[in-house]
Length: 199
Image (cartoon, rainbow, N blue to C red; front, side, top):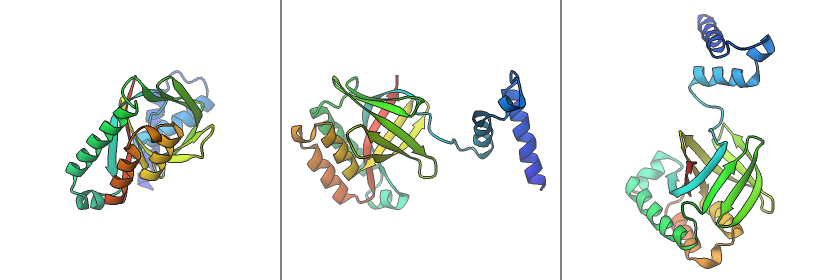
């Protein structure tokens, strides 16, 4: 009970400090302000700060568990994978300034690839830390989304990444599909994707 009282007092103090301009109780206890208090008290954000325009900065590779990372040879394997994927992505035109995402506050997004723009909707599941991307003409796919400051990684299971690249029309232009399939077979539980930087 003491702990609950302490959390309540801290929450009220945070709300009061952050909302001195609040005009009413409904303003004070709005969903946005409640989320801020919960995030501050628990130390965990409800969703990554995805809203904005993000440009491709390189490929990303991560393992779903520490055990898989150790089994695969640690960061050396991840670095080798990222280097190979960077090479393959460059061959098909996924390079800085030519590829990226714009996530809007209304849960819509635009994926830019060269002169093409692909639109869709997105939703974020805080329990799994995954974002569901639904392109206008493609079945939805999920990616692990981690945003820190002006950097964000979007990593997919290998088959989902292949599906996305195929949709974007790049499969026939490069050996990136064989590369991704080979890496997926070698390192089960590996996630592949993009490192993005906020503009």
